[in-house]
Image (cartoon, rainbow, N blue to C red; front, side, top):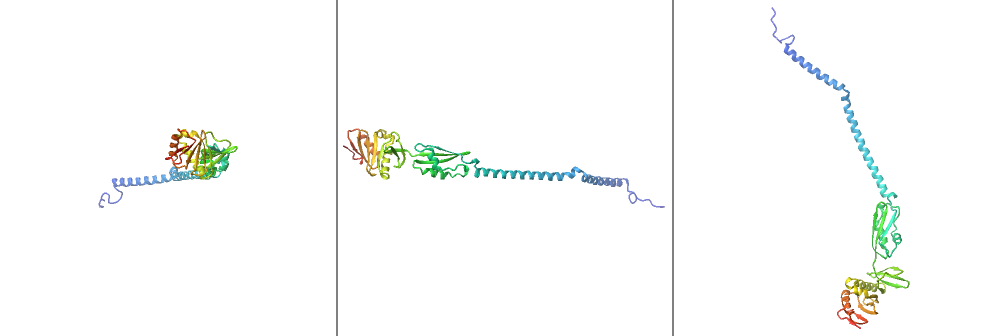
Length: 277
């Protein structure tokens, strides 16, 4: 008689084991099927290539933007530094009275058509400053194509008659211009160029102070044979021996008092010891 086999010792597995094996087999089969299905899915296969194309497109866009920026920069540099499109087309002048605008333009010698950024403003101002009548000059760029030359002329304090014309002199004794007729209100100046003319001009400038307005209104002419021998001619054919330009303020105060007394020659060369004749 053959002994009975214990359950699970051989042959077919028991129901529980069979179920476990079948369950494992079913899960494994399902996982493998899912992997195979994913590998055959066209959308899944397209995802890596689509991302790569998008990355290349972004790279091309960045490259195109960079190229466009470089081209724009090159064009702008050409327009500003080499092209006459933004070059000088006009030269305007301000502040002239003794000089004419054409005289200033000729001295400035601004190259028409030259790009604005390449203009040498200092050189232009230096050329204009060589004009004797110019005290100060400033050159300004007025975009897109104009240059403005701002001129400050010397201020005349007296004039020297020269026949049919008059030479203007500034407060430093510089004869800077010849005009057909002197500006009204200026006294005549009779002094050699150089130190005598400078001393006489300094005295006239000192008398321009508002405190000496009444005295300045009496002044007709100033002469100087030397820097230490300045003389004034006043209305009424009166003469003032002024001496040097030193202590002009003190001399003007003393002279204002002396003029209240009659006389023809007033000497204030030594303001502490004035005399009247």
